[in-house]
Amino acid sequence: MSRFLKTQLQSLEAYTPGEQPQDMQYIKLNTNESPFPPTPGVAAALADGEIRRLRLYPEPDCTPLRQALAQQYGVAAENVLIGNGSDEILNFCFMAFFAPEQKLLFPNITYGFYKVFADLYGLTYTEVPLRPDFSIDPADYRDKNAHVVLANPNAPTGIELPREEIESITRSNPDRIVIVDEAYIDFGGRSCAELIHTYKNLIVVMTFSKSRSLAGARVGFALADAALIRDLQTVKYSTNPYNINRLSQAAALAAVRDAAYDRKNCETIVQNRAYLAGQLQALGFTVLPSKANFVFAANEKIGGAALYAGLKKKGVLVRHFNRPPIENFVRITIGTKAQLDVLLHKIRELL
Ligand SMILES: *Cc1c(COP(=O)(O)O)cnc(C)c1O
Image (cartoon, rainbow, N blue to C red; front, side):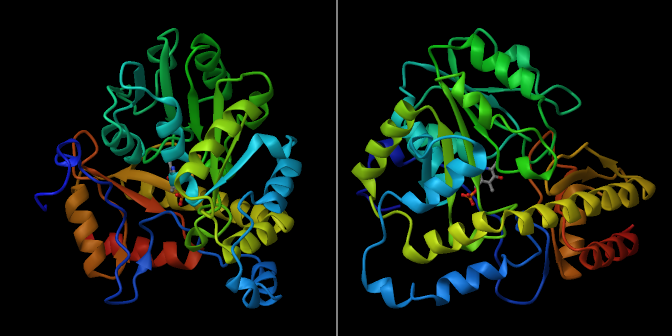
């Protein structure tokens, strides 16, 4: 740390992304990327003149992409904001709507970035404990006059909160914002997207990184009431108007135009998830009920840290969070059937 870093940031604990090692070829089941390449439409869209046009700034409003997403979700383009990954959307939301004197709630076990943004902006917040079965108790969030941030399905548990519960939380905090982070909604969960017509305080955040095979393109989006989207636009135009580069806009648009391709891949992942969960249970694992493209699993015979390290040595990367009460779990991204069979083979060797 230099002596110039401002006091407010000196104790900030930054987000730790999952490993992206370059030293060898791993079977990479640690950051919930898709095992499938993006639709062939993406390569075609990039080749089609977009490279020559890189000398020009991109369209700052991302209008074609917003229109395509609006059509897909049955909303208007004014209800859609595109971000440089959903992480940037979340950043904009925290910056725009949450003030230090207001209450802010999110689960104690959830996506690690919420806490980082809250600390970055000097917010006061409560990390609400999950139930012993790792599910969210909606009563903890109702009638609290608090901003609420929920990943649904939650990460790294994979457990879905029924949409009715999200709706009741949103309805009961009418003067505060509820953010539903639906990064994993396309793997069998029920989206809250259509609720944005009813609830002016609801922001649904989604991403191209998981179900659309475009983690490297960095594209996410928010669906919300037009007034909220305008506020987020103000923040965007006050920080980085050209936040989505040309290649990423073209790639994301091609993906939306071939939604059937992504849907089919999601179905395969849901099938592979059931296969992996069954096999792990047969090996004595506890596997939380996942609606995401990963499972969260623990085995009494081997701790989470040992399982993570043992698998890494054998060329398979999974994610381990070294903190109670989840230190005995590992989070395993659902890969192809062939990848999962290698993983299972290595796990059997370790056990
Ligand atoms: C992966 C993930 C994100 C970040 O997605 P990007 O669009 O790649 O920034 C956001 N929220 C949750 C819960 C995630 O798991």
